[in-house]
Length: 400
Image (cartoon, rainbow, N blue to C red; front, side):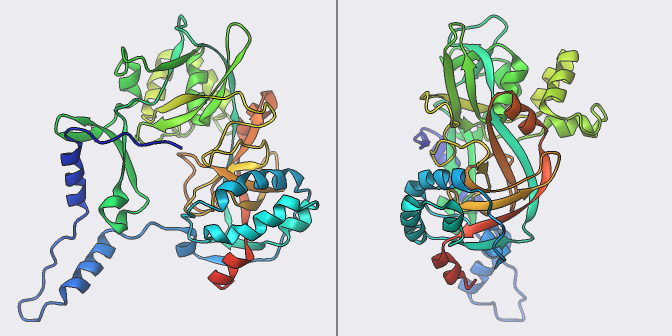
């Protein structure tokens, strides 16, 4: 679990400013008409100025026919690992409550027929049910624990990076967070990628390790975790430990929009190839993505599984997906039919999140490690149909 550093110094003043930004503005009323009741005016104005974040429940969920679940053996094993979290966590989507999962988790513990078990859940579609599917994987790249000539440092989370939960200042801001740092009496955005590359974190002992290839290191950030093959042949696993709060910009889209890569060329290998052919332009291109990821060392873990996802459960190749928790209960199973060059249909489990994974039915499939996983994940961009598999208690509460 990631802990937010304590606020210090001028950060209190900064948060007062943030609180003021969420206060209710004045409402002008006609002098010839009696003003509306203050409480009603304030509530209406606040709701209009700060609409509640969209969730699966507010977007709308409908019950659909149960799809052909296929061989769901690996999904059942992944779901069992999620159960310890499912029965405790708050579901931001509004579709389930923690207690709803007690029955399904108890049944999953002794289930011998995976397909039959998942058939006891209720198939639910959020919104249109269709969305974009992409892929990610656990990269392995050459690296070192000590400074490497020409290498790129992977940084630990800086202690002055502060995450502020804006929901503490008003219910309309629930679920909204910002990250930054204290500067004098103010709270300002954290250093962006260009500033960090220019040395903003130098001399602070934050280097966790070094990657030999700067372009591979850049994509390691996009994947969020990976393996470093050290000079002695051993492997060091690293995982996500925070982000600088700056918006993510997909450089593949920039290259396509500028006509520098054609259709089908904006894969990971295609992008890296372009940057290596134009190293100065490549550095400038990477700086256009101002987002910067920080890492921590992970335990070696089971080599057949991936790193821990957002709920702390090791990811299962070709089963785990990253999703937006406002639309998919994290830890829950779902059925996904994905089109594209490598179409597939299977039961999966939402065990991760991602900075670019936002919105209903937007899913990112974890493919594991190795050359095949890299190839498939790097080129995956497909339309898919998602159906959530919810506990009967949740469906009954929703009237489904």
